[in-house]
Image (tube, rainbow, N blue to C red; front, side, top):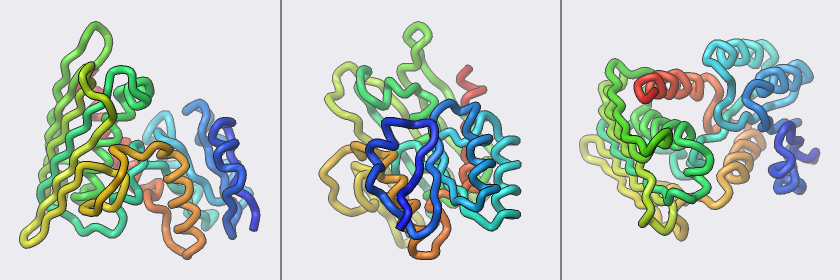
Amino acid sequence: MPLVDVAGAPDLAAQLASLSCRLPVLVVGGPVADRVDRATAAVRDGAHVLLAWPPAPSADEADRLVRQAEEAGVEVGVMRPLGASGALAGLPDFRLVTVSLVAPVNSRLAAAGWQLALAGVIDVCMSLTGGRSASRLDVVGTRDGDALRAAALAARFDTGAYAQATIRYSERAEAESVAVYAARPGDEVEAASLAAPLGEAADAALLADPDIAETAAFVAALDDGHRAPLPLHQALATLRLVQRAERQLA
């Protein structure tokens, strides 16, 4: 089987050197401004593409790539910001979701920037509610100089579901952690990690290598003849909501 190819992310390429897939796959990282061009060239060549988060500099560019992939008949997926595809797979739509993310101030997640954490909690909320747009979104944050130290958001989705999420960077926390609760009539799940399917025991607070986990999930889906865990058209809805939240925090 052909090996998975990687563009724009040499460190990830080294980590994925032995990963193969039955179909041609290109994983695109590197500068956000270059991702759509690289993905477009691969799509035209008939390759399936997995984009790092964020998939594009703007929602309009991502939307154009969605149409090009549909015309070419290939799959374009996006890595979930928190590497949560394994945790979120196969779950029903819930009516109420809460997410709490805490990261040490010197952690990998903090170094990646608050935009990634914001995208991560919004992705989890949208995935668990099945929401594709929000009729209401409220976001507030506190800062230490230019650095965001905490943020809270509340959203009412088009499905009627409601979600709340908090992000906090702590000098006392020893490791990144995330807690999730989701409920609907007659059913609920609760987890203290995204390192395993929600409701199952996990050994780690967050996945140590989310990019590797997301790539493996994408390849497994293609090998099984399934859609991407997070198809670009769904990620586009998340991207629009993230950009809306970022404007409130600006």
